[in-house]
Length: 140
Image 1: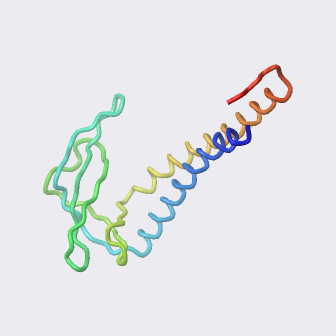
Image 2: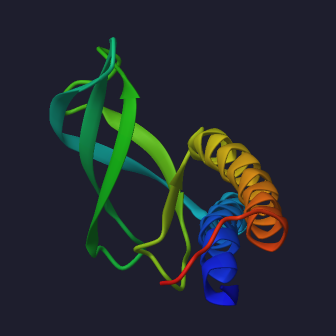
């Protein structure tokens, strides 16, 4: 039974950990990163519920001239092929990049995963109470 509790509580904890780690990485890139512009090479339309989004594929060059791929999702109609978008990348790891506004999207994931974590802890306690005090029998 303890393995089930670890799974119920651990899975949202892993999600929360990776969301916070991504925010820390984005902050480091925004603080210490090298500024450049990425060229938009493809724009594809994406639908999420009632909303439409543009999924951008971009390329940028680091200080050595090596080209790197980047992706972004933006509101529909703001960017077209051939436009440029400012971004920052880490000098020692040029494949890691951050686009302005990237951190805001990650905060949504942190908030959702935090509430999922709180709910999973509550659910684990309720399941434990059901198993201990109720007629609920569990045998995996």
